[in-house]
Length: 449
Image 1 (spheres, rainbow, N blue to C red):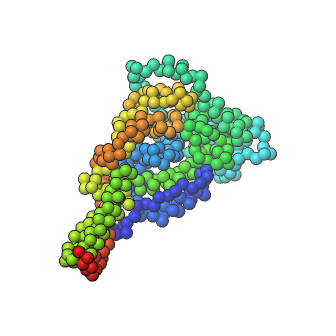
Image 2 (image 1 turned 45 degrees about the vertical axis):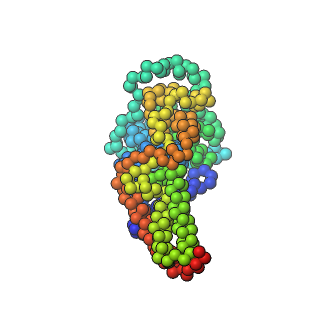
Image 3 (image 1 turned 135 degrees about the vertical axis):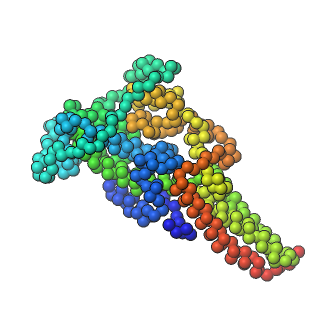
């Protein structure tokens, strides 16, 4: 990476409309042009496997998608699918045999000529040259664990669940409604392994108006639901998996790295940027005053440090960095990090209770003081308006927002990228300040006073 011409990853804007494979390919092509801006240590694989340190951990990535990008459902679904695939292949062969592989050839949306009330027909797998049960059993991962720790003494699980039982819809009902909306009336195989979990995934991510609905087209949604009527095999998710992964790799990940390189919150960056402009304006005013006076032209050299400092901090601020904070390799705490653990059951409105399942309620109470629910596969929507930090941060004075608390940046790669940007800003500042100062010194004296 060039020191003088290094650039952060370009911002990849979301394309309008539902996600599809064509859009994902556009994302990938855009990011390929600037792949050198992201070091291997901050690759998508390292972020997902949680090999990077703050501020580039998996939790940081999730926080970015929840609070900044507002599309955390993609990562939540993708993490679940990776875990589900391993658990499916670790299941006994007798259970896997109940859910044959779903082939893309037969996964097209049912046409108007097909009868949705008829059972699904299994394709002849011999035509594809692949055995119906040709699978691997090398990957192993234990199934998701149900919370087993002691409940909080202030929380009565049974009474709370009974209070919202009438407003909670079952996953099965949601699946039936989703299938009906795309013209699929045939019932799924209930004997297949993980069928109840698949129903919960449909009710959370695939059903229209679900809590964490993926931004899929009607055609893609119908194709996935049609495949899940036939089988619970992970291959039934092949289309949506490619779309979600392409969006995460080509759009969410580059934007997350670009955002993580910044060490200041928006108020701090705007403050530093304006400070840089003020220094440059001050240098210009000083130059004009000295040119109009009888003072020696060498006094005009005092404009140089103002130009140098102003342009340097301005260029760094343009790239999201505060040079003052950078001296200690620190960053501002994000707004949601400034008020500790703020998530609680009391922060949900009555309307939000309609989207809670009994497992969701139990999980929220069991987590106690953890902030948010973004790392959970199943739960409420990713809206954070109910979180207590929102109101607290809104009431926080502007001066306290600008000079928020700092925390040390642990990831060495991020620190090196920031060093590169700051050094780059110093070099560009010197390159620009020297000619400006020469022009100011060489200007003829007016001598008005």
